[in-house]
Amino acid sequence: MTGEPSLTTRLGRVTLANPVLVASGVFGFAREYERLFPVSALGGVVVKGITLEPRAGNPPPRLAETPAGLLNAVGLQNPGVEAFIRDELPRLRDLGTKVIVNIAGFTPEEFGRLAKILDKQRGISALELNISCPNVKKGGMAFGVVPETAALITKLVREETSLPVWVKLSPNVTDITEIAAAVVDAGAEVLSLVNTLLGMAIDIEKRRPVLGNIFGGLSGPAIKPVALRMIWQVYREIKVPLVGMGGITNTRDALEFIMAGASAVAVGTGLFTDPLAPVKIIEGLRRFLVKNQEKKVEDLVGAAHQERSQDNGR
Amino acid sequence: MGVQGVNKEVRQETAVIMEISRPGEDLYHLVLHAPRIAEESQAGQFVMIRCAPERALDPLLSRPFSIFRFHPANGIIEILFRLAGRGTAWLAGRKKGDALSLLGPLGRGFSPPGEGRRVLLFAGGIGMPALFSLAENHPETDFTLFYGARKKDELLYLDLWRRKGVTVYPATDDGSAGFHGTVTAAAAASPAVKEAAFYYACGPRPMLKAVKELMEKQNIPGELCLEETMACGVGACLGCVCATVHGYRRVCTDGPVFAAAEVKFP
Image 1 (cartoon, chains in turn cyan, green):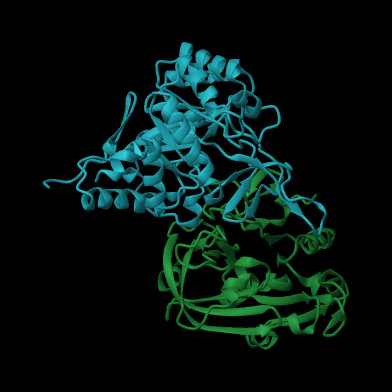
Image 2 (cartoon, chains in turn green, yellow; image 1 turned 60 degrees about the horizontal axis):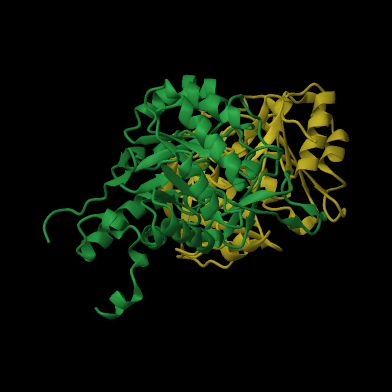
């Protein structure tokens, strides 16, 4: 074998230097972790979800730890799109990595308005539509589980921007491929999956729910098998690049998602277990490619879908 | 020293346990060699400690602990903690020589207490360590401590406090040591309160609320050190917010120390 293996990853019109992103909501606007590792080493950063107006978020407590998992109900706390453009985007442009802006609306039209506002801005590689955030009572949940609404939002965004449109899917559905097909038909170029699973925890001493919002989104290793299964299903049915997420904490997890069909992966809650997890995974992927004499990571995408007979023939 | 600024030198560091002891029932004292964190620590700051074996995924989150003492000269930090759940149970089982993964120092510490001023400290239970780091690093200040616990055995290191020149008024819920009742009741009965210029408090929320109300009646300003469940510890996830007059603020980076006047209690 000659030369370094390639980690370059194409997600439609966006090309990443490597397939490791950080997921929306765990990385803020990329201010906090730059003291711990070079953010430019990442394939890209998906910023905290942005809404039209500033949002205070949900009342605390917002977190509850569960077995190998984390429930959160932050409630889309964010400064609003104007403050984001003014205070965060100029710095994000200079990070030296791809910036994907996650947007959330409370009506389909709000998604369109957000897309129109952000379309004019430099330094954004793609928009990720948060049609699946389960935390806000009037918000994402309903959009993400109804194919027609999810498609309408995608279409309205497409009409307002020439930026690549990614759609982040909710796992809280009967058949994720149905939603995936609907949003791809409406113009989604990349699918991110999965968002958190809706859950709750109860404090038995106080005899009431732990979270201020009662329900929260479950993330972390506890949901990994569910997320992986959904990547597998969508990869078989839908021919657009996928970004896989849900409980990824190490290189092995990332490889499972890639082999199930994800072109890229995002580390979310795994960052809280080890802040250096994303950079360790990038290095781990490189080593795996070298060890297995693979030329590029893209050759591994969907590798687990090969017929079993090929396996046996080795 | 820039005490009020958020420390920009947050580090992930592998610390080695130099000593682990049990000064009270369900109370533990860790002495850690963590030279880079010790070098940068300020009174009132905290560290996140991974409370699980390496590569284990449960418990998932690191736990925040106030820094009790820090000694930059020999690279030592000390932590006091109470057995509270799965994470602290794992930590309590560690031995001398074991390694721990730390993130820190984190958060905004106490503002400087001022030379020669008479300053009150209110500690409730395992809220004591943060206040000790303040007293130890400001020998120029005249501190009076009201230190409350459920019972005598849970009042830790009273001698150490007194050796630092601090006047200590213990209080216990069961009356087994010091004043029989809360720290606020103990303080209300003490002449020290009338002469104080400032106060600092760390402890359970009901205690902090009562202290704030008592001090407001006396027109004495102060600071509260808060505790909250945290995920990232560095300000990114917005999971640990508390209600303030300026809206929700992150305990991990806007705090854990807040001006008492800012903090809203339900």
